[in-house]
Amino acid sequence: MRRGIYPGSFDPITLGHLDIIKRAADLVDELVIAVLNNSSKVPMFSVEERIAMIKDATKDIKGIEVEPFDGLLVDFASRKNAKLIIRGLRGVNDFEYEMQMAQTNRNMCSGVDTIFLVTNINYSYISSTLVKEIIKYDGAFQKLVPEEILKYIK
Ligand code: PNS
Figure 1 (tube, helix red, strand yellow):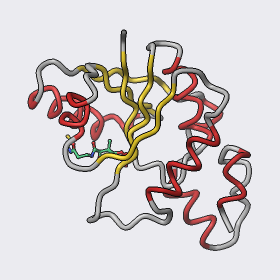
Figure 2: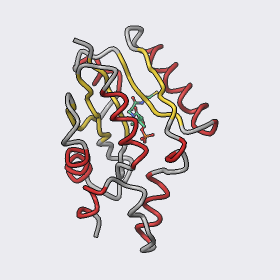
Figure 3: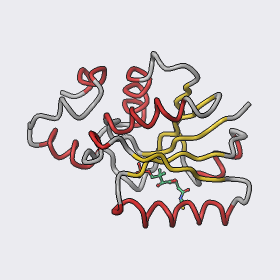
């Protein structure tokens, strides 16, 4: 059985994330969406809220598990017996950071590989950071996130 990990902060999940999740779920038998629970990063939504939003937005996709993680991603991957990390690439701005993470992860754990899925062009401008800013200033964020999570955002 091939298990992949799709890690991130998902604060909150966006349509860009959802697109990657749907495509990644087709590549593996089981996709674990690993939600960062890191006390040094103060999120807008608690890890419980972020997990509930992702579960709701992905309820119709087969083979999805949603779990919190802290500590190193490679340790979580090895606990889950997964050798594949999946990340989305929106453009050149993401590239340097993503390369650095993929190389560091592979250096720490030679059994783990990262594959990148190129974001759908319709969503390549969306980021959780911008969505949070729009929510904060009461702007129109509704077209940037899955419909299922609107009820979690007040
Ligand atoms: O959605 P994000 O915030 O870009 O996701 C970043 C994430 C969670 C994938 C990354 O910060 C991570 O893996 N953190 C766990 C700690 C870790 O393993 N750090 C070393 C990575 S090289």
